[in-house]
Each structure stands twice: as C-alpha cells, then as structure tokens.
Length: 90
Image (cartoon, rainbow, N blue to C red):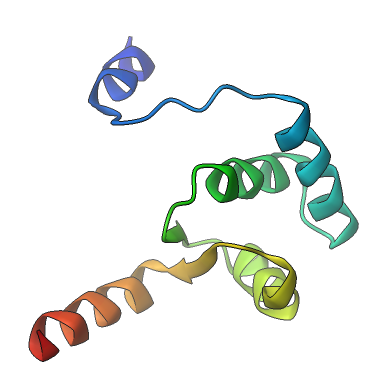
C-alpha cells in the first residue's frame, strides 16, 4: 500500500525496458550491484538531475566512473550544500 501511495505522488513513471536493462548491465561492469545499476540506469533514462544516495559504495563507484554516468550521483549532504549555494547565488 505504501508503494502505491508513493507511485501516486510521482510526476513520472518509467517503464522498465530493454534499453534500461542494457544500460544497467553496463553499470554492473563498473562494479555496481544489479539493483544499484538498475536504479542508476532508470535515473539516466528519466533524465533526472541527481541520483541521491547515502550509500558510500555507490558514491565511491560513481565517482570512479563519473565520466561514463549521465546523471550526477550525489550524497544527501552534498545535495543540500548545492541547493543552499544555488539559493544564495540566485
């Protein structure tokens, strides 16, 4: 029931397809777990600005392969800092 409520709040629903699966498999080659790879592939496909995580392993791997990932993988604390900096400068 909780998941249904979260889905109702979503602005966009991404249907998993072969393109996302192929990209997720590429991410697994970069040492992401299958689930993490899938989440990042969906984030890329959705063209989100940030993939926010508190998982240090994801952050470390994403930093190592940042040039191959088309979404900014960022910690919650770094996101807050970016938002504050943006607000102060605009």
